Image 1 (cartoon, rainbow, N blue to C red):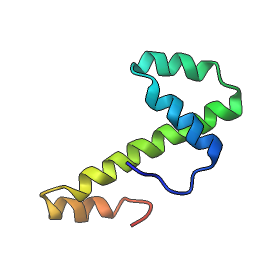
Image 2 (tube, one colour):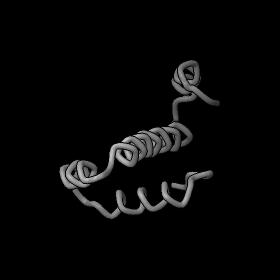
Image 3 (cartoon, rainbow, N blue to C red):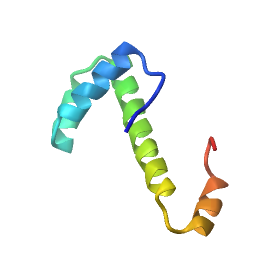
Image 4 (cartoon, rainbow, N blue to C red):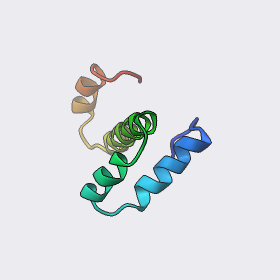
Length: 76
Protein backbone atom coordinates (compact mmCIF):
# COMPACT_ATOMS: atom_id res chain seq x y z
CA UNK A 1 0.00 0.00 0.00
CA UNK A 2 1.29 3.43 -0.90
CA UNK A 3 -0.29 6.70 0.22
CA UNK A 4 0.97 9.84 -1.49
CA UNK A 5 1.20 13.34 -0.10
CA UNK A 6 1.93 12.56 3.55
CA UNK A 7 4.05 14.81 5.72
CA UNK A 8 7.16 13.44 7.39
CA UNK A 9 5.33 13.48 10.72
CA UNK A 10 2.42 11.49 9.26
CA UNK A 11 4.88 8.94 7.85
CA UNK A 12 6.48 8.64 11.29
CA UNK A 13 3.09 8.08 12.91
CA UNK A 14 2.16 5.45 10.32
CA UNK A 15 5.52 3.69 10.68
CA UNK A 16 4.90 3.41 14.41
CA UNK A 17 1.34 2.23 13.85
CA UNK A 18 2.48 -0.46 11.37
CA UNK A 19 5.06 -1.73 13.86
CA UNK A 20 2.38 -2.37 16.50
CA UNK A 21 1.04 -5.91 16.23
CA UNK A 22 -2.08 -5.89 18.39
CA UNK A 23 -5.04 -3.51 18.25
CA UNK A 24 -5.10 -3.08 22.03
CA UNK A 25 -1.42 -2.06 21.88
CA UNK A 26 -2.33 0.48 19.21
CA UNK A 27 -5.06 1.89 21.42
CA UNK A 28 -2.66 2.14 24.36
CA UNK A 29 -0.04 3.88 22.22
CA UNK A 30 -2.61 6.33 20.92
CA UNK A 31 -3.52 7.24 24.52
CA UNK A 32 0.07 8.40 25.01
CA UNK A 33 -0.15 10.92 22.16
CA UNK A 34 -1.01 14.56 22.56
CA UNK A 35 -4.50 15.47 21.38
CA UNK A 36 -3.36 16.76 17.99
CA UNK A 37 -1.26 13.66 17.24
CA UNK A 38 -4.04 11.36 18.44
CA UNK A 39 -6.49 13.04 16.05
CA UNK A 40 -3.90 12.78 13.27
CA UNK A 41 -3.27 9.08 14.01
CA UNK A 42 -7.01 8.35 14.02
CA UNK A 43 -7.36 10.09 10.66
CA UNK A 44 -4.43 8.12 9.26
CA UNK A 45 -5.97 4.91 10.56
CA UNK A 46 -9.19 5.70 8.69
CA UNK A 47 -7.20 6.59 5.58
CA UNK A 48 -5.44 3.22 5.66
CA UNK A 49 -8.77 1.40 6.00
CA UNK A 50 -10.21 3.34 3.07
CA UNK A 51 -7.13 2.69 0.95
CA UNK A 52 -7.31 -1.03 1.74
CA UNK A 53 -11.00 -1.00 0.78
CA UNK A 54 -10.15 0.73 -2.50
CA UNK A 55 -7.53 -1.92 -3.28
CA UNK A 56 -10.05 -4.68 -2.60
CA UNK A 57 -12.59 -2.99 -4.87
CA UNK A 58 -10.05 -2.77 -7.69
CA UNK A 59 -9.57 -6.52 -7.43
CA UNK A 60 -13.30 -7.23 -7.22
CA UNK A 61 -14.89 -9.67 -9.61
CA UNK A 62 -18.24 -7.88 -9.28
CA UNK A 63 -18.26 -4.77 -11.48
CA UNK A 64 -21.98 -4.19 -10.90
CA UNK A 65 -21.40 -3.99 -7.15
CA UNK A 66 -18.50 -1.62 -7.76
CA UNK A 67 -20.76 0.73 -9.73
CA UNK A 68 -23.27 0.84 -6.87
CA UNK A 69 -20.53 1.45 -4.30
CA UNK A 70 -19.03 4.17 -6.52
CA UNK A 71 -22.17 6.21 -5.91
CA UNK A 72 -21.18 6.54 -2.26
CA UNK A 73 -17.44 7.23 -2.62
CA UNK A 74 -16.11 10.66 -1.79
CA UNK A 75 -13.65 10.55 -4.70
CA UNK A 76 -13.56 8.50 -7.85
